Image (cartoon, rainbow, N blue to C red; front, side):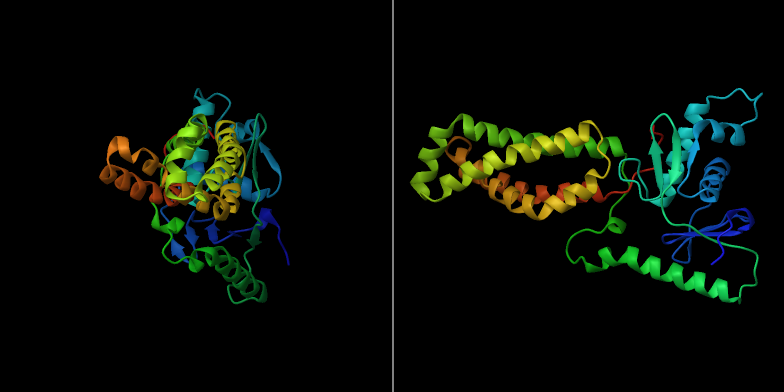
Length: 290
């Protein structure tokens, strides 16, 4: 199948289709808001060289004349962020635009380019089928969900805010584990009074939970790539742990009252699902250094 970017008038990648002549961006056939001039130019440059590194200096030369006085770094970062917002992409979990620190950017998704052949041609038909198959594959995970939130259900949010909230949740659980281990004898007295089997479970899960939370906090602080995917792999293991520790307020029910303890338990039962929703939110188009 021909794939000559220099003669392409239509690019297809993932569930998206970009008309290089009109600048129209469509997702699964639905028209998306028009990209501004600079984000569109950046996208066209990256699509013309898929899987290749396009340096920041190359982008500067193509987007701004040599005699133009402009804050280039700010302008390019803004263009990249707007482009990622339009594609539902992010710097920390890239599906389309990968950031290479101190180098530039690379378009990592498979790209199909269509030349000026008639719309009824064999190649056009094959490309259309490929685009539909790719869109169906991308949509498959969301179609399998039931009561849990899908990315399309959630609002866009600034990545920094998401990381802060997610990090605070990890700190909360870490404090639970450390506090329980610090007052182990008191916890044992309370738990054994109810059931002797619960104490070993609490002890084991607290010890196991500490490295999990420390890993997630480290991943957030150093902005590991793919931390979202890693968390979703851990989610089936973390969920029972979080549900068990949602009962932690009952350990201090005598001090705060049974009513308040039960309310805290109910709130904590929601927290693991809130963690999942946070990492499913698409990045907003606000200016943030990629």
